[in-house]
Structure formats: structure tokens, C-alpha cells
Image (cartoon, rainbow, N blue to C red):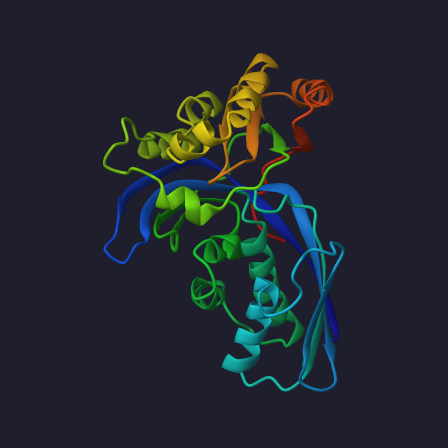
Amino acid sequence: MKKVVLKAYGKVNLGLDVVRRRDDGYHEVRMIMQTVGLFDRLELKKTSGDSVTLSANLRFLPVNEQNLVCQAIAAVKKKYSLKDGVEAYLEKRIPIAAGMAGGSSDCAAALRGMNQLFELGLKEEELCEIGAGLGADVPYCVIGGTALAEGIGEKLTKLPPVSDCHILIAKPGISVSTKTVYENLDVPGLSSHPDITGMISAIENQDLKGITGRMENVLETVTIPRYPVIDEIKEFLLKQGAENALMSGSGPTVFGIFASQEKAQRALSNLRSFEDVKQAYVVAPVNRES
């Protein structure tokens, strides 16, 4: 095989809880992850020689070893002693530094792409093992769909697909550092925690209201006071008929879940009057990476 083209899907967190901060500085989490139909496109080509090159549609994007795509390609080449070079092209659509795991998803796509390009025959578990060394969200992005993530995000339990719904994603014109948000999270001082166990039951029972009624993200306690526009977007989506609205990950992306596509599209149209929102899409949940 000489060329592969893959979709790298973004994600939202239907529920995000932080259990504790470990002695090594990492945070133990318990969260429900969901891939959505907003994706980057990654193209990998086998080349002569041993070099790895990356280009992208965004000029400001790093296209060297700082990029997780390059790191993933290099990791697979080293682990399996692959001598051919790889030329990669990344077309970004997922908002950057937005709490949607765009970089991790690109990394996971690169792992899956290398598996296909070099016909390695690696199982999902093996790709996840490599991905865990590259980023906490990468193993989840390898498997996609609906999943419970625990530990520092690497312990994954697959869940049934969520109920049919439509998700409006709204990204304000700001970027948020995940590292900074976690460093400023007061875990012992949290007054409430998401009902993750109850949300799992609602997912298993295909109970959309049971899912949306339990949507909660403890990282909002850090990000919203610093960026009140996140709360303003949430309130806007609720007024537009969303079953519920939440910040994804460490933010600043906000998503609203709508029971009907008509309501979601109407809200998207009305969102154009919201000057602080720079990117917005209506998408569906994605059950599996493809």
C-alpha cells in the first residue's frame, strides 16, 4: 500500500469528573467521551528514503517533531524498524486548543494510518498502547465512539452508542491551555461531581434526557470565571432549545445537544448573531472511528 487517507474525529465530554490529583502531578479522571462528526483529514504516503515530512492547510501549525502526527509516525517507524519514509498532509477543521482533542485525534489517525500503510496487522489494543505514550487522550481517539475513560484517561470501557441526537458545537475566539486549567483546579474544593454512573445507565437505556440531565464538567469551575463568554454561549444554546449545554474538556468549546435537527440548525443560524463565536457546526455523534 502506498497511500492512505483517514478521518480524525473530534470529541466532546458528556461528563467530566476529576477524582483526585496524584503525587506525580497527574489528575485521575472519570469521564464519558463521545466522538462527533467534525473531523480533520490526514493523508499518509510511503516514500523512498527514511525521512518523515508533514505539511498542513494552516500556516501556523507546527509541522515538525512538535506535532503529534510526526511523533506517532516516528514511534511506529522506530518500534517496527520501518525503513521507508512517510509524507503526511493534515487538513485541520477541528478547532485548535478547544477541548475537542484535535491533536490527539490526529495522532490516533496517524497510528491507524501507519498500521494500514505498512500492513502491520496491529490490533486496537496495540495501537492504544503506543498512543498512551504520546498523550492521555490518544488511546480513546484510537477506539472512538462512546466510552468511559478513567485513570489519567487511558483506562477505557466501551459503551453503547448514545441516543439519536444532534450536537451544535460553538467555539469562541479564544484558546485555553489544558495544562493551566488542571493546575488551577481545586479538586478538594469541588462542591459537586457529575453522576457518571447514572449517565452510563442512561446511555445503556437509550435515555437522551437521562444523559443530558447529568451533563456536568468540573473544569468549568476554572475556565468559566476566566472566560465568561463560555457561560454566555451555554445560556444562548439553552434558550435556543438545547436539551442541555456544556463546555467540552478544558474548553473553550461549548456544545449543545438537541433532540431534533431542525432545532439544532435553527440555533446554528441564530448563533451567527453571536459575535464572540468564531466557529460553529451541527454534527451527529459518531459511533466508531473510520
